[in-house]
Image 1 (cartoon, helix red, strand yellow):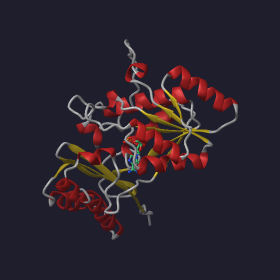
Image 2: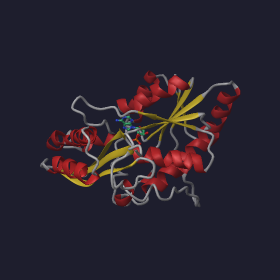
Image 3: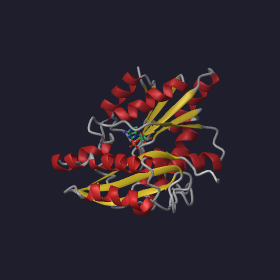
Image 4: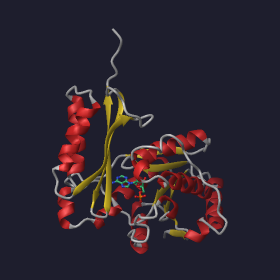
Length: 288
Ligand code: AMP
């Protein structure tokens, strides 16, 4: 049976019991409405941890004032069933008032890395993410936490936070799980109309094309971005937020592609904003 934990004090109790029993605890943070992408993170966590806590919390501080907080899809009963089937024994499902009580005033913010890509159209988003992830680490006391590559900037921001604040938590990154046509699984895909859904594979197709160009020797980021933009612009419904080819460490533009490159896209389809990315290793030129 899955144990549903709703308060921080109960979560602390369970966390201490697990640690005292010598268990290795894995955390999988989610906003619920689970799909196979989330379940793959639970499976990944169980490879390195014998007890897994899945948190479900639609975190208000990571949504902008005009974003989809109220409309965000929810189905707790189904989620709990899926978590149990995936092999995790604990679900941490706190209420908003438990996490952000009256008078709450402390935030965690990673500078620099949060300024571009999703940080431009979602200026407060990552501050909300790093704050809630810090609070989840404090509540669950995990040895490791698993995050999806799907949210690549989030992964980099959390890795930086863990390093800078000396959290004793191993950050594990799991690959993006996709539909058969390449669309990255996302709770937000339910927002898509059938017509928009038909256009959605353009994101991954563009990313693959960008990767193929780089693998064929293209080193000009402009050329890669231009080709990717054209492919997404060719769809009737997709409205580009950004298409970027940036350096993976700093998320900064490069004059020539080299080292670890992140190709990342964010595209609006009506009220849905979909993101996707691929990572490409470009051999560095060795000085001759
Ligand atoms: P969310 O519920 O959307 O906040 O996502 C919770 C976690 O699941 C994050 O670490 C995401 O990166 C990860 N995730 C979301 N979609 C996918 C996917 N398609 N494949 C792998 N992980 C995913």
